[in-house]
Length: 77
Image 1: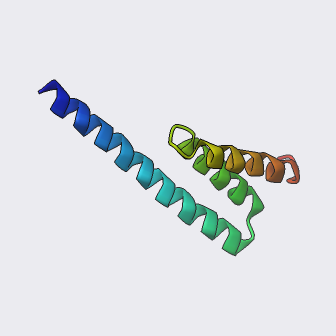
Image 2: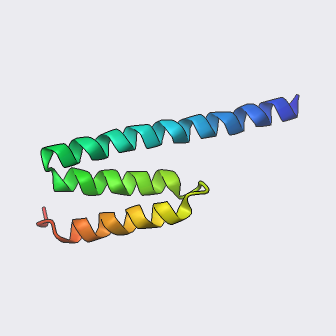
């Protein structure tokens, strides 16, 4: 029984991560289409955070670095 619960928990985490990635990619596409650089930076940050615990940690670092670089070009609010 414990293994079934653990397997369900792992599957739930994967599905949640997949949902976060899909949402993040849509947000990134929308931000870029609108030319909203602040939203683009935020989407890159969220995608990087969603990827950091996956096997795509190198991709996560790249997205987080891109987010920081873009954020540095934005005016302070």
